[in-house]
Image 1 (cartoon, protein in one colour):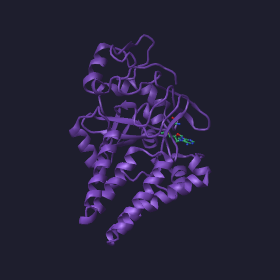
Image 2 (cartoon, rainbow, N blue to C red; image 1 turned 120 degrees about the vertical axis):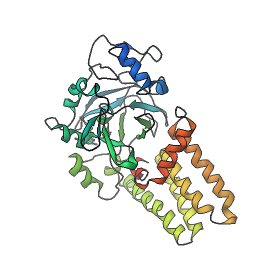
Image 3 (cartoon, rainbow, N blue to C red; image 1 turned 180 degrees about the horizontal axis):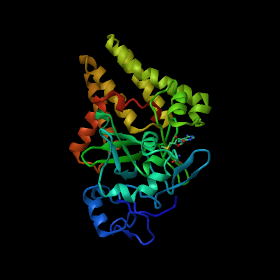
Image 4 (spheres, helix red, strand yellow; image 1 turned 30 degrees about the vertical axis):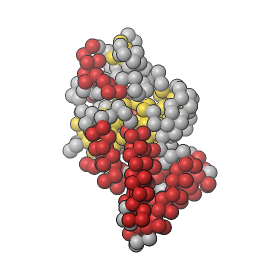
Length: 323
Ligand SMILES: C[S@@+](CC[C@H](N)C(=O)[O-])C[C@H]1O[C@@H](n2cnc3c(N)ncnc32)[C@H](O)[C@@H]1O
């Protein structure tokens, strides 16, 4: 799919105009450009995020259908793409912007399963939005990202802007496939992927036992921090946290993972006067990683909201595999 299309309404075309500022984002009309600038928040992300066919492309990924591949290096923490969903699940499938869905039909037709109904395509491709309410949305470009049990990106939804942001969790080189983990299940994930997504995963974590074992160990340590802390063994809990941080270092994990573990360690350390200072240190580290992950394009209050949401919602941050 090397078709060029309007970044807002997905209408394909050959003579599309470019955003005057970033010279990367394409539009079919001034009206789409105006709406994208305001409503779809390009204003916040212009020059701060990658764009299709400039920074990444959709191309054939052998054995997987198509996938997304980097056209340049992305540093850890860099924003690869920012996208608004076209459909949202809220008592049925509802268009997010009424005028967009018809123009995007050609792109929806290309989604897997190829001959499936809209609902089938939604079920296979939709991604979480507003995780605390369990809602999900269909993203035309981001849904072409294939699974990898470790993955080199993470995604998060910014409620206030109605957009999903894909962030590099590892350094990505030109030519690398861009991936994320479709599940946070560690044990039994291969069965889950086969049943829900109809493929057998051949990634490094599935074929190299040392990486698979590190993921299992990370999950155990993550649980141990809370278990040991709840039984009053705060020193053991902090030790588990430190071991987990070492695993993150070896896997070059995302800032989001560090954020979570430093926050857990903060909670344990402040329960005793003797480790109070350590607790403050852990909290500062957690905030540094939150800033690194959520990025300076979000306003301070938006980062704090995202951060609080992330910490307060268990299922949204238990993605050990995205480490
Ligand atoms: C959300 S779509 C990803 C884009 C898809 N490859 C396409 O061509 O549109 C999910 C589907 O892609 C394929 N897929 C994703 N990751 C894969 C992987 N690691 N190995 C094999 N197939 C994969 C599976 O068919 C899966 O159901």
